[in-house]
Length: 494
RNA sequence: GGCCCGGUGGUCAAGCGGUUAAGACUCCGCCCUUUCACGGCGGCAACACGGGUUCGAGUCCCGUCCGGGUCACCA
Image 1 (cartoon, rainbow, N blue to C red):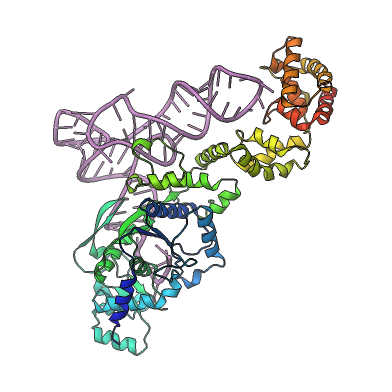
Image 2: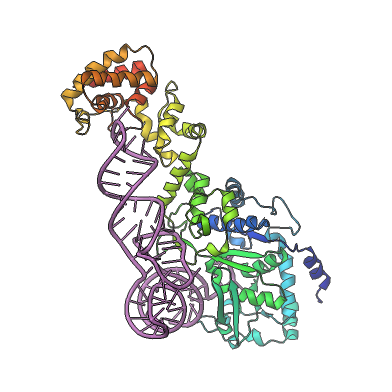
């Protein structure tokens, strides 16, 4: 069976040239972990920074691991994160299809081409027979290595099951260049004749990757550093085909601690988990971007970056070689920063559902409550617990009325409430200013510092020691009737 | 175990032969203040170790130790 050289020429002709092209190539596992997201982000950033093309490719060559709805998670996450792709299964493109299972025959053809070129061979061994156990990959251990092309072809034609293996040179070294790690050289004898085409006819990840990256014109191959060790074999593959080797960008992993990568198995949060925990997409992206990359030059001190700013500032030089531990505390800090940077209107809109989880009474104004919260929560999920006292007065003891700094104790508090209640009852308007001015004037009249009066009022109104907002704001939100009811209740306790 | 890669405060990180070794998070103080938070100011805290090279080393070289990755017909 002669090879159809025209096929290869046609494939070659379709490859876009001249622009930076990067690809995010997840396998659909139904779970976008933080490391994955960061890889997607960096890949997107490299393309956007260069005004290039960002491609989405789905790597589903493992028939046994397909998961329902998994590609949807990928689309949804990328869309939510604004990591838009220019080519992909859903939008098409010049080098379609973008799903590996739909490119099946391509891989077979290229594998046979490589056999023809002498850089691959048919192997008919049972899995155990090739004996790759130690670090010593002597080619002499695999009998199929010696087969003449004619013999091998005859056995293939007779229908004998086979795999296609890469033929690694026995001697010499291979050097490849990584944009982050620099030049890395290994001895060829430490490399195994890896399988390219599996017994089921599907390519291995390693082979499909090289073929697709070439055929799709990928200029920068971005991936996790776990592939660093197989990069020399990729290089040999490119060389075997006579193709230009792309720029490799191997990213060090995101760790859960010094010993372990982030993983679903350890219960580490995925992007979707973080969202559920109340983290904002922009904060997550900002934090994750800085886990493994840092800006240089005049923006070296900058920590808050929008996606656009990242795209502008991103460079391979700033990438870190060492693994980074994911710190939820620092993510939380970024989230708080983003929450505070929102306009009051946007914040109120975002906070309202969380406020209403505990504050069901619609007469209690969500916007005013939100205003108290913006500087006081790090995550939206902090909210319900902080504001539940507006809905119903908690049980509390008289000890709360004692506060050293405010110079209050039960007796003082009693006097303060006795004075405050009639004043508040007589206030013409129930506005922030009216309540504030009334209380401040009263304190002056009673010859006590503001805190001495404010403390018992706030305690009686809220029923808890720590509250978002002060006495004035809380009374204003509760309304005159409820405020007076609570203050009288407090007075009864004293 | 072989091969590859890494190692600056608890964490993320600047640093590219000469710096009092940045900055951020966390933690602790102080100020502001109507509790808490926000904001402001200050503080604790690091070049894994040992040899070289050099007038001079966190920065270059070698070794040791520690950590990670990889050695699948998984990706």
